[in-house]
Length: 289
Ligand SMILES: C[S@@+](CC[C@H](N)C(=O)[O-])C[C@H]1O[C@@H](n2cnc3c(N)ncnc32)[C@H](O)[C@@H]1O
Image 1 (cartoon, protein in one colour):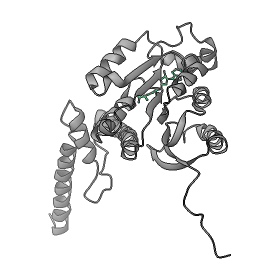
Image 2 (cartoon, helix red, strand yellow; image 1 turned 45 degrees about the horizontal axis):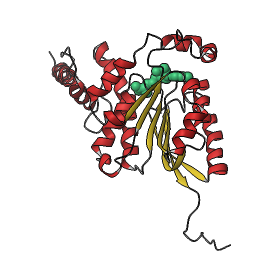
Image 3 (cartoon, protein in one colour; image 1 turned 180 degrees about the vertical axis):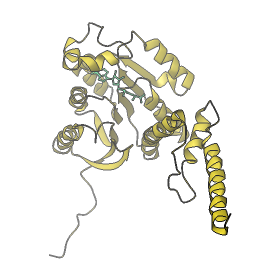
């Protein structure tokens, strides 16, 4: 063997050892991944300078774990971002099953010890909770998207969701799961009763998947939000949700004197906005010309 062949073979062996160490670091040989290990798997996806490692030989399951980790992690960051700047109000979530994003918010609230400053904040989750197309409640909704609602129909799963919430174990007595079509549960009466209690929404989290459901929710939300609230839309960059948001933010500005500012995205598809008052006691800017 000539010297440069030795060198090439040596390089190959080193590369293969390095690769097997990398795959080990990815945990390829471990059959089960629990939550904490999954986080380690994700951080091992990145090399020393932060770029992605080669992924060619990781197993299918590991690839799927790693791929899903990114958007889920960023959704969790949305809850942390809102908790970081929290200025009161209730959390209302539209599209909640299987409660991952709801639980994100409860954990973020707890991590920041917000329960001490805001002992009165409540958490609402609106969803079919399994009871969709075969419930007789709202034929109109089923009409506009039968395939969609068929996917989310699997019999009454409210008790199962309530049990999951209890297992998560945070602020359970402040949480309310509201089962049914938004078109049935988001009534003018509900809005009126809620506002009459002097309450306001501090974070409206919309994860409704389909445009008609976004429409129903935005129409309901008129007058429910306050300055320093948050609005998150999970399909903002995926569908024409941004067009509904444009109409809604105009309404916020013109009717309610509330401005909106884009805060961040999640997983490339979701968008978080923060609301702020438009009136200020600070003197206006005076420009030279
Ligand atoms: C993507 S899932 C929500 C996922 C949830 N945010 C999580 O991360 O755990 C969308 C949910 O929206 C609900 N949904 C969509 N349109 C609805 C409507 N008009 N009425 C009631 N629920 C609706 C579906 O039942 C479904 O569970």
